Length: 209
Image (cartoon, rainbow, N blue to C red; front, side, top):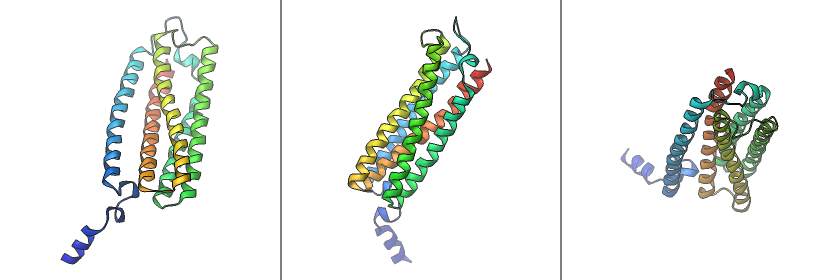
């Protein structure tokens, strides 16, 4: 029994941990990214609180219900939640050392992210054409700041994953690459969680006014 325990403890970290946690440096960097996500959550919390206070302050501008496109934000929700699923599949293939599978599902995730950003940009342009601009009212300022900040995060995630595609193509799946893929996945899932709250607070609750 003692020999078995000694053998277990003598195994390299990679033998009983996911590849992204197989080095001490990888574990520390992943923990550090969790800390970053907490700070980012605080940022979005401030924007949500601001919107909750200001969404009825429409001034001379339109009400939330007048500019929200139900089909648009519903499609955005479906696309972004689907991209979270495809990001998870990419991580699944990464942990199994399947380079082609990882690349394929990262590309699919990027395409879905681009579709989301395209719909959101179209929504913003449509609002601006009707006169619903950032400076028109307190509601519109809080709306564009909150939704736009989330969109900027999604855009950054797309660029991040694109850079990862290049690195994976050149270097394959190494512990360092695996850690980057895992952290990017965490970031993407975080943005999906933020969108669920955004969908509920901004579009559903705000849309009732």
